[in-house]
Amino acid sequence: MGEELKRMVEEDRRINLKAVIRDAAWNAEMVKKLGAKWFELRDRWLNEAQERDMEILKDPKARSALLKALAAKSEVERLKEEELERRLRETLKTAPRAHLKPLGPPGA
Amino acid sequence: MPNVSSKSGGEPSRSELVALAGNVLFDTVGRRVYVEKATLSAEDTVAFAFAGALEALGIRYSVVAGYVSILFGRSRRSDDIDFIAEPIGEDRFTALCAELRNRGFSLMQGDINLEEFLKRVYRSYLSRGLSVRFMYMNLVLPNVEFKLARNPLHAFSIENSIEVFLNGKRAFRIAPLELQIAYKLYLGSDKDVGDAVFLYELFKPVLKMEELNRWCAVLGVDASALKGA
Image (cartoon, rainbow over all chains, first blue to last red; front, side):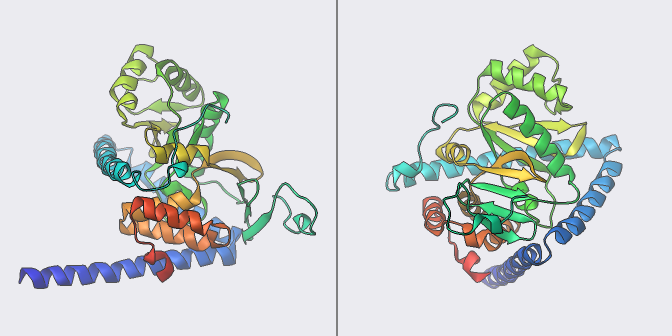
């Protein structure tokens, strides 16, 4: 039962990912085909959504909940980065170091 | 927007322009990208304003993550615009906050006007590798998530950043696309993979494939999603 459920979840995820990839590729095609017109449509949608958000965030409860969610999001991102840094330290033992060097002096 | 045809003809040129879309040009020599659009989104406006403050103080930075795809036409929104800056000390951070305040920004973690408080924020967040968030004109969404470079990937993003010109004006610098794509694949959520595929499909003609493969190897990610697109 557990194995079957796991297989079904993985299959769902695979199908979903396929749809995400197809959508992203289509999105890039639209940018290439429609150019400025695509940006106009997209930005109209973005700005409308922005206005709706601003209305919702006038409610102090919604605003406070969002701020808490943002703090939690930062923490998740930090943990992901720490994991990446651990992996990087391992990879750097074998990867070409010229590709990854400390930041040079300002204006370099 | 520069003219593509004026750059051909075999004469020595300081730029080599590739049209990725009618309103998106990439200069493969100068590492610049030109975008023309009729209106700016809230994300564009906030990014433009924040970058202006960093540049006024000569602080090197790069914009990374979701906003990079949105800038080039990805049809999604983002809660934040991520900026990574070169390491700066407490005093420069305080000066940056003063510049940002003058440009309409406030700090989500507390009062941007109090120097002592800013120093405490610096010690509690930035110097420990954590990010701080800035709001533009009191907008919670989208906000700017700001952190200091602390690993070689951050350093590479800043050193090799690409200049973006929006409607003819120098706007800000973004991380190299090859690294962005590999990093998005590393993060691995559906949204991140979608962004990676979008950038790959749009910038395919100008991407350095060897570099992309190298980043995928460094980050240990499978690039088959890109080929699948």
